[in-house]
Length: 225
Image 1 (spheres, rainbow, N blue to C red):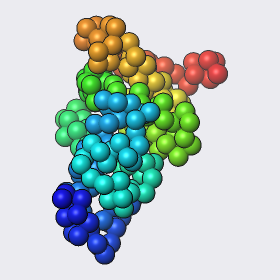
Image 2 (cartoon, rainbow, N blue to C red):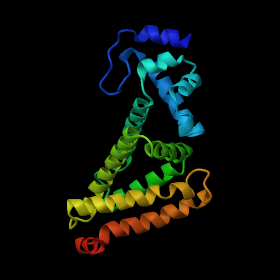
Image 3 (tube, rainbow, N blue to C red):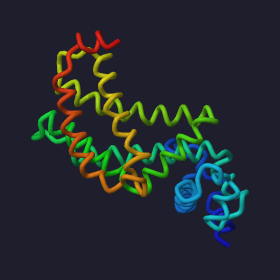
Image 4 (cartoon, rainbow, N blue to C red):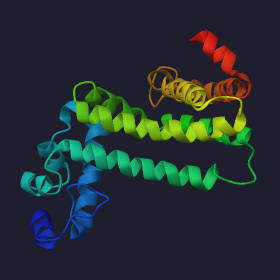
């Protein structure tokens, strides 16, 4: 019944710019599909991430899911886009505050990211996205674009914190900070072997990474290259 109602609501409706492959009148249906896609990816992994399995998860026919998302790559793109919007809202409310110093901003970014990695959704979602990206060029490009946005935001704060760095140096440091945080996922992420150590890892990371961003010089980066 749900898929018939959704199809009737969606028939002839134009696709909005923000969500590729979706239809304006099908917001509830699209949200249900996205929720099911996220559930399948987190709980069952990349191997189970098919239009057929997602349709079963949200109680729709395969044709109705395909009507909104003809390819699973569209689902990946929309999930990442909406996740980025969610993160941006968090950073806007907690980090982009005029009373915070650049050091405090970077410290907050690291804490927020590591707290997020400690959660089930992020640990499992990004592990599976990386797996998909290994074999799918489109997904790899979307994941790269997602992380580029993260690096750009970290870079803004690094540039404030260490004005002596060139734009390329800033990107190098931002990339290192991001890689250092993401590297905790298989070790201290949700349900991982040393998950209990994440609070201590967070303290070490905030101290070490902020200090690095503050003190490293262009000459040191050039010498390392």
